[in-house]
Amino acid sequence: MIQKLIFFLILGIDVTILFFQIDNLSISSAETYILYEENSYLSSLFNFLLSTFGSNDYTLRIPIILIHLISTLLFYEISKKYVTTTRNRLWLLLLYVMLPGTLSAAIVLSHAFLILFGLMLFIYLDQRFPAKYTNPLLLIYAFIDGGFAYLLLGILIYNIFVKDYKNIVFTLILLAISAYMYKLQIYGVPSGHFLDTIAVYSAIFTPIVFVYLVYALYRKYLADKIDKVWYVATSALIFSLLLSFRQRLDIEYFAPYLMIALPLAAQTFIHSYRVRLKMFRKRYQTIFILSFLFLFVNTLIVLFNKPLYHFIDNPKKHFFYNMYVAKELAKELESMKINCVDTDYKMQQRLQFYGIEKCNHFILEEIPLKGDIDSDVTISYKMKPAYKASVTKVNTK
Image (tube, rainbow, N blue to C red; front, side, top):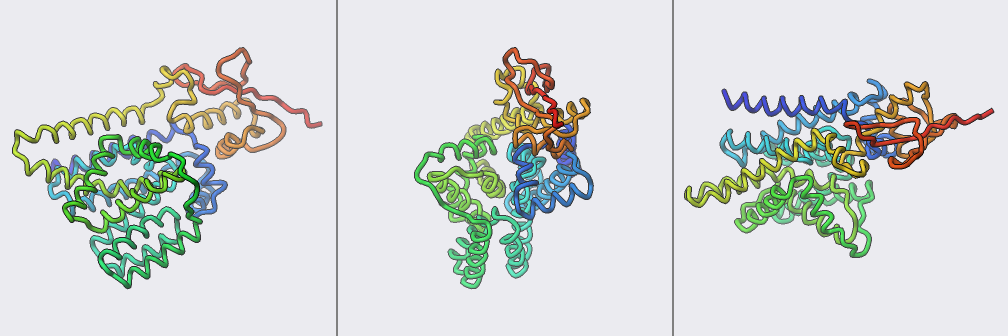
């Protein structure tokens, strides 16, 4: 009974915190790109929702939070195959919801949350039904988003190793279709993005968790205890690292593939811990405590990040800066009876989401935070200015 209570408590607190974050965030330029410029199923879906229920933050973010909740439930069910005790599964669930990458995918409009949900659904169904039921899902994935190409790649490699010739042909055709539709390309010359990719992975998972994930995948390989999840996660990781030698990657397409490997890492950790005598378990206890301590501090910083403006000389270097300003700026303009402006392209799109259209009657121009230029609009966080702009009325007569 107490374990069920903890389970629902973790989910309840997670979703509640995410809902409270909606009012604190503005739409980012990356999100407006998906909404207004991308020609994708994700864009079509959210444009339909916004046109039906209104263009606001709740319409944008509540569906993402709900899909995150479903993904989390699927993750917990998937983990039952690898982690036998409920207590350990609850620790794994807590780790999952606290990861920076999970928090981001749980509230920000990106391809990551769609890919993560798709992966969880596929693995959950694959554990319970034969391929004839999951192959139609792969067919849908091939057309719905280019990020699923790496799932198809992992399944193809798996089929090759298990010599499933029928499904080799099937997944190869789907991979070719996906690569052609979404123009997946390998380009560039050796340009040193490898360390950048490692750094982003470390930020998404935290350094300790990322290093142990890679170690666990390697251990699984040495022990010859590899399954379909291992092939999918490992192929995506290796492919992303190889590509990073030649081109800058959008890690949101690859990070979900490592998240599905968390149960494998937990299984490795628990096994390594249990086979040792109590006197030799301290190293694992230290890793466990440090991981959760680091995650807890990191989660607090991510969720309650506005006080950081006090300590940052340049507010634009705040890691969440791109998720701020636009909503408050739109409200300031509305209070000035201004419902349309001409400004820089990215801010123009963000203001459009909040009902401030493009026109040539008013020019909104950002000005430096430091200087003697008077501003008509100032957006501040924790009493520290984060954005200043001048508004000029243009006489069109």
